[in-house]
Amino acid sequence: MNKEDIARWRLHNLRLAGAALAAPEDVVAWLCAVQSQDFGPAKWSLAQRTGGVGDAAVDRAFADGAIVRTHVLRPTWHFVLPTDIRWLLELTGPRVHALNAYYYRQLGLDDAVFERCNALLAGALQGGVHLTRKQLGAALERAGVALGGFRLAYLLMNAELRGIVCSGAPNGKQHTYALLEERVPRAEPRTRDEALAELTLRYYTSHGPATVKDFGWWSSLTAADIRRGLETVASRLQHEVVDGVAYWFAGSAPAAGLASPTVHLLQGYDEYIVGYSQSKSVLNLAGRTLVQDRPVFNGVAILDGQVAGHWKRTLNSGTVAFEVALYEPFDAAQAKALQAAADRQGEFLGLTATVATTGISATTGRPARA
Image 1 (cartoon, rainbow, N blue to C red):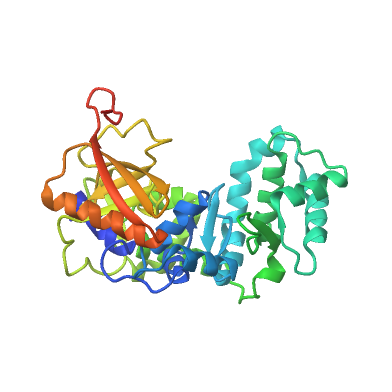
Image 2 (image 1 turned 60 degrees about the vertical axis):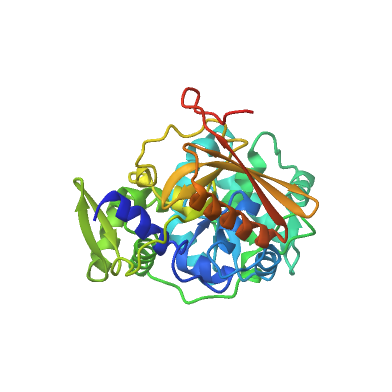
């Protein structure tokens, strides 16, 4: 196994290649947790791994509570399943609190403040009420809670991490919060060892081959917890050393290789990109100086498992226009694969896709302008 093999194997394990899944909730179940602070692009990450699910279907799954969204694993939102949310919060919530501790102190948020605000939030949502962030902020202010700076954001995150609130049904285009106890059915509790084993196995099954440091970044677990998790599931995992680093995985490499050329238009926070730290470079073996114009070109174009460029899209009446900045020009077969990738996202949006390509300047690392 070499690093190129690792990248292509990950495409299969992350369900970007090979057999597609049927529904958005199946994707979340397989990946265990899917980073979703940027809601629209995160929906595309789910649909991209299915056999043709559209934007409206992902919206329905979210509105119906088949998937929920909360802060877990790291100080950012993730999609998780209702059956997983409680044990994931219990296992990783304390770690996220530890990562947030500096900001809690800077904002004057202590246990007494959290306790009072959590009671106020629970009271506002009691009885199946779903409220927007703005509405909850107004309820806290009426009770005399100061919300300057980022206080509201951290108060709501704390309530999520403590399992008091989670995502509710959208109110039009606005996100809402609901009481976790009312939104999510009760599930069988897990012991800490059971939770560690579950998270460890599911990460390396869906994200492997990956390193211990990769898992530590993704989960925020301590080194001791990761060792314990690996000890518990060691008989169900394998590992191989590549360039002096151990990569853990479950099962065997896919029997069929990746069809070439294959292009994926990934959103910038797709699990293929953000699910790793130590070995993130395996998708950029050419050592590209990643484009600096990321606020605009914030998608990543992947060719046969490797970074090939970056993209942005513009929604028009009936069409979605993709502008793709490439490190190297595509040949005819690669251009056809790029159009196919754009067409798939167009189908997801219910729009016709067009593609225009530009180059990335070798001197500035920015998209070349006409």
